[in-house]
Length: 78
Image (cartoon, rainbow, N blue to C red; front, side, top):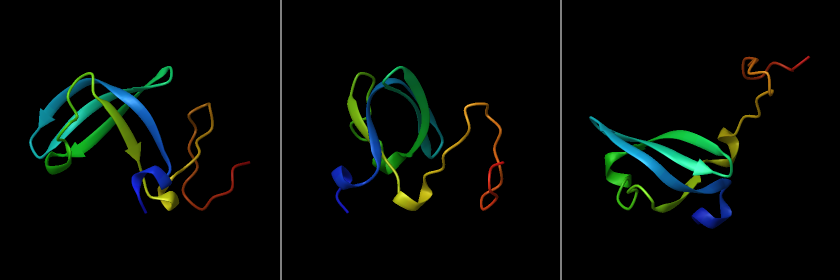
């Protein structure tokens, strides 16, 4: 599906560094800074200050408890 129809967040690139075959970005989204890795071939336009949209496949999203405790995939949280 087009990127606008996929789950995602809009943000601003705050930092960018190159690590071999990937760029590591710090993206400000709301009051959070998200750390993401982007393959070199997809990093065009990801300069510091650039507006970006982070997307992922719908089935890849996971909700985590605010405490940081993570249950293995498929386990029900108690």
